[in-house]
Length: 590
Image (cartoon, rainbow, N blue to C red; front, top):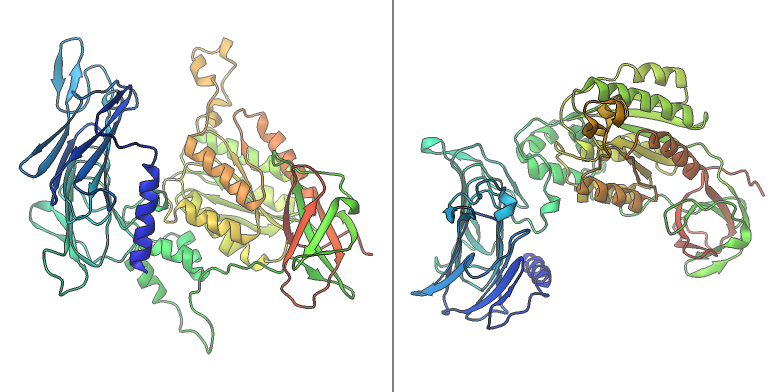
């Protein structure tokens, strides 16, 4: 299994480079160039790049060849910027130090006088034959080694080192020379040991103990203050904060929920803390299950009613993700186990929602906290009186402000007691909401409204895992993302009347927050709202309520008595998309 997964990772990595042609001549062009070199059979590749990142991929497609691609975000490039030489069985690749164009001088720190690191940055992607020996040195640039190399010696100052190599026969050593270790591994590693001179090390072996030393991969990773990623094929799966810290209440609640996938994500960051915590659990009684993989099946979508009738809930959106109103029986086609079934009734869904308002109270700016309180109170005044609301605030941990209730007076009083400060554990807080707060309500209509800037920096759980949990939860998610700088700016005068008009300018979200917010809404059936002006917030609230109310309870003639039915619904509207959930109430009692 390990070999198969590893080969798949190599194929993906190579596909990313497929657009880079390999020619015998150099292809010089603005912002980058490519080169292919003949190399000896057992080649050693030495790379020194203090001005950017280095990625080395071992590929069986290359035999006695080394392929180099160099790219720079802003600078024009040529042979003088990246040098590649073959001497005595070694391929030496170096980037030239930065140049002060006004004085014709070069500097070894990678930054031109009067410029920035990005002005002189050069990123290298190097493909080498299998079993090549690799040596890499970078400064603050990342270094990646992927594939079946014979050995890899990597040194960085603060740059992240990622090594994804086979484990069949591996000897490894990871060292931090000027800081405590920060690392993330897909496999369990031994304890960190402190060596002389304040050096920390993780060392050991994987795979065949009887393998010859010539067959064993040797991995030596040394960094002053960088992060080491081991066996990680996608850096997006790495949590925001890898520093040692105690388990938060949200992390403990997620572990208690029994969700194996989310628990495993936490375990990779804090294996011993998770192990110690699970040891405190009482032994299971009888056949009570322990941790189990997250269920891939949701509650039955079609709820049996009188006779052969079944009922489900359908939310219909157009190409822009907006709810489609005014649909009738003739607009719906229901398929059960692949066969069309007669539709007997369509009515607006009337059951109340269970809404969670998830509030980001990270940071300590009083203007921001005042804004959060006012925004939460505005939300209470917007939703329907029959909806039950729970309020959860989060910073580096969650705080339950109120459990589900329809008592608006109680909710308003609780909101006024919200405190702020600390980091942002958005992913952990959303996972906590899905598997702890909403889990008892499986089969009911649930939604989560997130008020945040969308930038996570404290979670144990990475975004891909919380995205998977969101998709499987059945809850609608509505991210209302507000740039962090926009909230304090709401109290400033208009630009003509202020001494600092820059502070009142249009502010935007980070690209990561924007992309993740859209993805959360997409997989859950909700809508994403990038709020770039304060006056847009109330309109977003109004639209969320309209979206929640624009769904339909569809009754149809079922041909199956089984609890599990494969149901699909199509709507006769061009570009319409349908999201199904269990029906828990209807105006239609036919």
